[in-house]
Image (cartoon, rainbow, N blue to C red; front, side, top):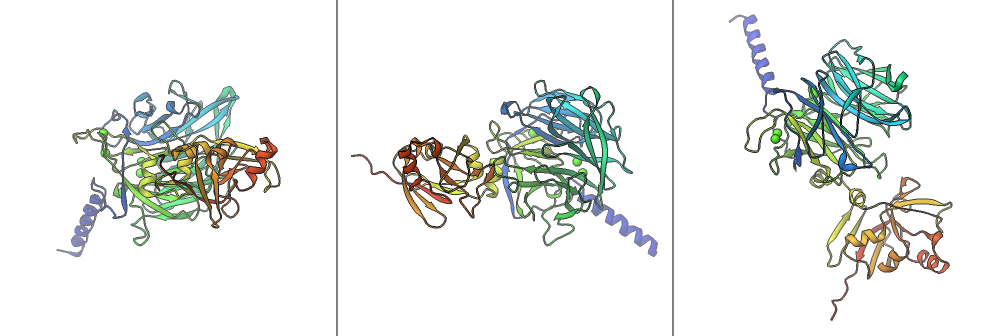
Length: 506
Ligand code: CA
Ligand code: CA
Ligand code: CA
Ligand code: CA
């Protein structure tokens, strides 16, 4: 055998190995992966092979049960589903690859703007989603044309707080473009390319953190980049997470890095929340802190449950932290590369729905703000997500400890005590510094007590009164009640609320 022939044999062998890596077999499952059950699924898309790709969730704030999920079928167009997974509409616009949406105002009326990269015409379709009919219709006379040197690929949207909506789209070459959407004549939109970015090799999934002005882009083989999302921001990115292939020591992702999504809890402030990435090579999902330095918080896999198969080799994902019927802590939607019937027969690809509460439970993501101890000693960890499940109460008042009238929000003490099964008796409240006070539960409820966790829109600072402060509408109380409320009934920096056992009645 000549050297040249031996060399080509080596190349062929290497190609076979590389081919195996792209086969249906996942990389070995790391031992830190935790299982989370699938909750629901959409019907299979109408096309076989690799077809479903990327979802986007729209939350109907006025009627959460009427929220919608859009999914791409990269052989045909877009589909729209309801919260049960049923298909409501579809639009055959071509090889739509990635999709995202934002709410905005057009011609003085609320509008849901949807954008999708489209490989049939090498551009971006900008559409409107009708929240009542689930129909999609064009918002631009002609789609945005790709300016890239290679095939257009991933996409996500960014909304400046009280500002414009921008499209980010990328190409297999690593080029990334940013377009500003502006209102044109007749209520439609126009798009202007305002900035170009790049990553070293093929990107796809991306997501913007609107509140923090950040753009996260997956470089499929290498990891996750963070850029400024501002149209005049610096163009340099920072690699914030790596694939195992590029960093065997610290990599938490297995190439390809695919869909990215941002879990942004509404009450917790812009530093709280999580960035989720589809680690396609080992069929898992990695969770990172939303806040820099974006620490890795855990990894999960989506397992079969109640007739819904698990999700494998996922492309796109989307998540919302808003409460939806059946999903009190929010909803994750993922593409399933290997959809199957309950008996295990392969079907066309689809999308899986997963409750965030199950992810939070499995990974232990929510730190306890305080502990509620029910009678008998059962401990209830009170997390932001737990509090999000209670009605929010607002109190506007002066207090003896703050300089100006403040707006506090949090659950009513009546609702918190109801979760512990009481509306009277004594509660022993312990503060972080060891201060202990005993309060009469019926009196706290009667005076309108609120377990506040925000003041003037910001989470209470743990270095001052936070994370939880029992406050009252002091300004509205009688002099006598106000005197009682301020003396020993308004503990702050609460660590523990313990319902005292009542001796059984004779
Ligand atoms: Ca890809
Ligand atoms: Ca994809
Ligand atoms: Ca599956
Ligand atoms: Ca299935």
